[in-house]
Image 1: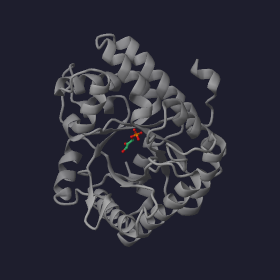
Image 2 (image 1 turned 180 degrees about the horizontal axis):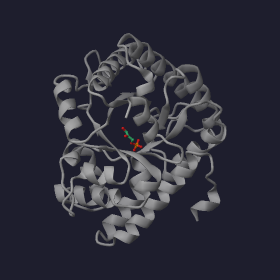
Image 3 (image 1 turned 30 degrees about the vertical axis):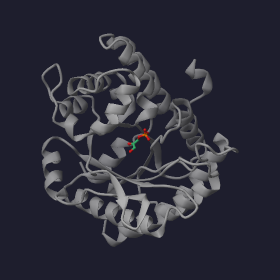
Length: 334
Ligand code: 13P
């Protein structure tokens, strides 16, 4: 399969990406929040339960894994990558090593992980991965995102993406402008514009073939503590406008992160965007929290009740699958 075909498969109409690549530290927090011990066995149990659901075949085009998970065996003896592939979904892997303080701008971060990346990519390919993820993070503040953060993160993202394509995998390019703060939607629009511009500038310099990439951006949205929050219609309009102006049309797929939106907000906003999508971009989801939150709560209550957990996860995935086509409505949530 060409990189372009893989990218299109990950973002196929009616499907999206399950971001299950939380690092062990993040999983510790997530499991603690539902009162479950974060052991390796429990992390595997939750993830294997999701990956065994019907939703996988119907609504999930790709799954992003963390290093621990791509090496794990399921309770039925096959490996986690085999289980995902069996459901006709593409295996992905988070390859960055996290966002670290920038020297000279300690309130901002630059994502690290380029050292030894070529070798790690070769190993992940052998383990079954066909796409990867690297997340850069930007704050909005009076002086942020700074030129230093925009440039250093874009440079790292482009070096990463070039290495991933060399290893015959599709790089997900994830520049995340955080929702944290009381800024309005226009501040998010401006920051997202600056960030995307510099990313595509660097991707061109590093000769990355955009047809074999997927963009994972934030939506253009008000800050989480903003007093005057934008409506879903405004979010959709401004997000699509920002993408049209700043993302080259060669990019086949755009899969949003949920970034702290509730499950239903993330679905509704994706749906609004697709209702007015007049581009050739396949626009879908690559959600972590907004796909897993309810399923995690159900799992924590009764781990052995696979049917109940599957029902909850299947519903959420289906709602997002519909939203990826602009066919969701509130009445389907009841
Ligand atoms: P959220 O959807 O929870 O923001 O996670 C997506 C993700 O992969 C962030 O890197």
